[in-house]
Length: 211
DNA sequence: ATTTGGATCGGT
DNA sequence: CCGATCCAAATT
Image (cartoon, rainbow, N blue to C red; front, side):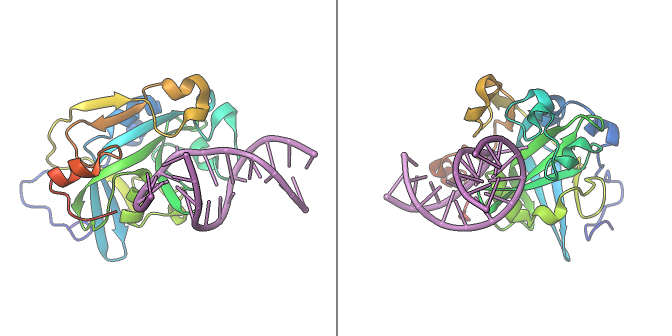
């Protein structure tokens, strides 16, 4: 029994990616996270979503990153720390955003998690970084937590189909000059839960709950 | 001390 | 496009 979920005899146990998995450039980690599960131990409830949309933020050189030009502040500090930890920040006054810190310690890369498909105990919209955090009850109190620990983590599902990966420019970074054009957003082409999907497409896919 | 604007979202 | 709403960062 792990966090209330039984492991059937003979079934593969879900596996948390190694520290080395996270110690790579955000641009490599971002597409690799598609199809993995984000798990939140929320009181007695284990909430699970399948990651379907990510963006890479590539540290000092990337003008779209909070760590652009090596900016090291109380807020960005966790990005300079060891890989495989959560960077959670507040944006526009009321939305939290969750990132996965990547690259070796001292190199401030991160992958923004932008959308999930509900898997277990997810009762709200998940098609955007702010909505994703709200649905899994993630806020800045989780800033810095180890994503290989027991509060908030990422695991490879025991069974997973391959993902048809699409890519595009990142969203909401028009200010970042030529970095705004880099196609560092990755997504599952077959998911109706993308942040860019239209309400009509979601209805067609049978998604019922509202934002 | 004050100003600016943001890795968002839903409604118009 | 706009407004909601707060904080980090930059500037004075």
